[in-house]
Amino acid sequence: MKALQYRTFGQWPEVVEVERPRPGPGQVLLRVTAAGVCHSDLGLLARDADTYPYGSLPLTLGHEGAGVVAEIGAGVAGVRVGEPVVVYGPWGCGRCRVCATGAENHCPFAAALGIRAPGLGSAGSMAQYQLVNDARHLVPLGDLDPVRHVCLTDAGLTPYHAIRQSLPRLLPGSIAVVVGVGGLGHVAVQMLRALCPATVVAVDIDDDRLALARGLGAQHAVRTEDTAELVAGLSRGTGAAMVLDLVGSPATTDLAARVAARGADVSVIGVGGGAVPVGYRTIAFDASVRFPYWGSRPELFEVLEMAAAGQIRVEVETYSLDEAPVAYRRLAEGRVRGRAVVVPD
Image (tube, rainbow, N blue to C red; front, side, top):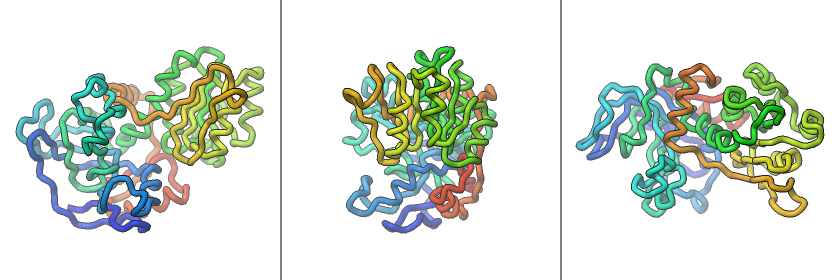
């Protein structure tokens, strides 16, 4: 079968022929119908041999996956051949108290046990077939289009996980700021409009992305340098109740700290190398700063329910598996609108 693999440090991934996997006991084999291209993969491709966290290469990329159940291993129950599913990505041990709640994204034992997420240490979804280690990591897709919705497994789940924690602060008259209207940000804007009465301010440096945010419901869409003044005016000087930073650069984390209100939630999801200082006179009193990681399995069910209800949609560009390296180059150049999706067949 074909797969997109990161094979040589410092080089772009390439499409190669690899052996089709076979499911062992407890495992499920998917015929992949769609795989999302994520900006965090670019950070992985930038690692050298000394900083690469997953041992040796090659690695089949893709941590946003959808597919149809092709084969099941011995002892598997709860799924059937032919069933359309998406893959819950942050695999945990499945046995600890944290995993028992469905929050495998916070499993404290996965790393020590060598359990790695697909595309982030284990073989991912950028292939014609994907092996999933346990049926519990498969979530029914129902009638949803896999190409249009595969990215909700990360680009939807991650901002939803952050927003859900902040909903008690997002009351009428409050302000929610979304920094970065890319693959995650354009979904976050829609989630906020569907889930709360807060005024949504979308922030970016690209006018096309700001126009996208307005089209998706943001009441205000503003360039980065104009954000602090706008938020101050809208809030009468009090600031934003929530800031969702999907860039995470030093400039955007500094902005997040400046516009946060007293008691605000600041969630930094982007991995741009910035940090929000917490201490006296560095951020508003009683503000909370979080670095959310993916989301729980129950939350993925909730995200898909929002999609089924028509509350969120993902802007996608599609590529064949042979074109997948081009998708990564376009992403690196900032030329992807919304999310890039690889369709193997």
